[in-house]
Image (cartoon, rainbow over all chains, first blue to last red; front, side):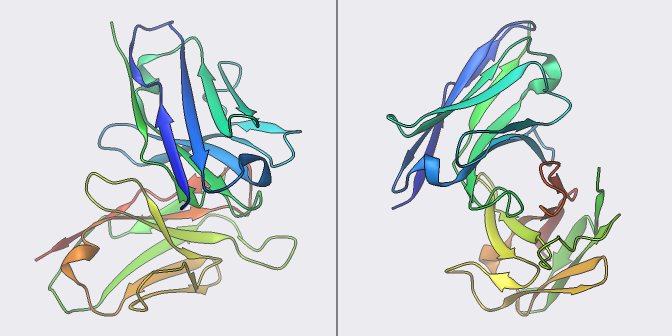
Length: 119
Length: 113
């Protein structure tokens, strides 16, 4: 069974850092494009970042470029999102998702992990 | 960025009646391979999004056939032939053609009248 399980969310102060994890089972992350998408409380969906299947390219939304880094550990079949210089506007549920190709986008989603940036 | 505009934003529907959600893109979504990468997602209350439709009209595995997608130029439509109670939630369109700048519509909240 395909599963994506996010973890690592929590409360952090503005300017702080957090690393989210997305543990995959039922498939191999290196066979897919892996995405992070966020949803602020009561708001819509916003794409954040993705990593292509061969691991050669990472992409980011302008709002997080230079602050967030996506990576993966093939041995652990896990994808990460390192978030630095966090702002109150980064408060959201962060979803991990997989897709076959770049154009397909995020297709199969995990249950999400909540990040709250507040003093 | 490509802007995806959904309407209506709120959709009260009587059980058993049809429902229709519109999504308009600010640019063509035809990709270089000839496909149109327009997806529809359903987000039930308290759940993560689930993809229902990909490439405009292809249903994902397990999606009831009362859900269908269509297009007319840069206008896209999700139709539910007969709304059931389990269809309550928020529906989003999303374009992947202009990756990596994926963009979603604002969401349409479907509720039972």
